[in-house]
Length: 285
Ligand code: PDD
Image (cartoon, rainbow, N blue to C red):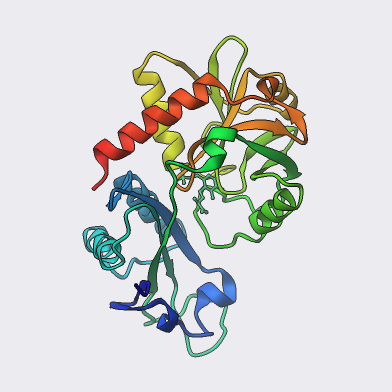
């Protein structure tokens, strides 16, 4: 089957899906994106992703070309047209293509809205069983990381460095503390069983998976602290793990080549992963 994409009102073969070279997403990274998981052909925690989309576009005064209700309809139709069972749906909205390259917002230009899907067996990912290594890199990003902007060069460089080191993620560090992963939220479990993840602010993206995992943990009377932690604290922790729409909960077993939690996948990460998968299946739309 040929993959189908969505571009500005039309479902087209992915190979024909194109936007202008004048698109401001291409010229200025003037756009916002979202990635939602698909399980059993349904969208996981999509209301949370759409709420963040609305917030992000609002922060950069970018009007959505469709209502959130219509966007979800398009998402569902795209999943169905691709007969996608398990994977990811990528959505991007940009400030559209003007007639030239002017930094100032164009007038009368319709925003660009594109979507495509990719198949991925998130449930049975080998990394979930074996855990991943992370490297640490300086966080060289801008100061509005709460906006899910398509300006991802710092993350591309961080994740490339991680891949070259044989690792699955890069943890970005600023002022001696971890901000987040290149495309995930960072967690540790302290020796006295407190789940710690950085508090939301302009310094990190408010992860949808992070939010759900914190709520699910608290519902189960697990102790959660939302605060920054250092690499040294992570190395001394009982466990470390990451969360994202594309990985759910994934254990971290080394940081910069040094073992965390004895270098083994931890019980809490494994438990939270199972809890999250149950939640995802039960609430997908
Ligand atoms: N990234 N932090 C950053 C910098 C991210 O890019 C992401 C997600 C997260 C986790 O957010 P969520 O749980 O809502 O996926 C945290 C997506 C998956 C990506 O860029 O592919």
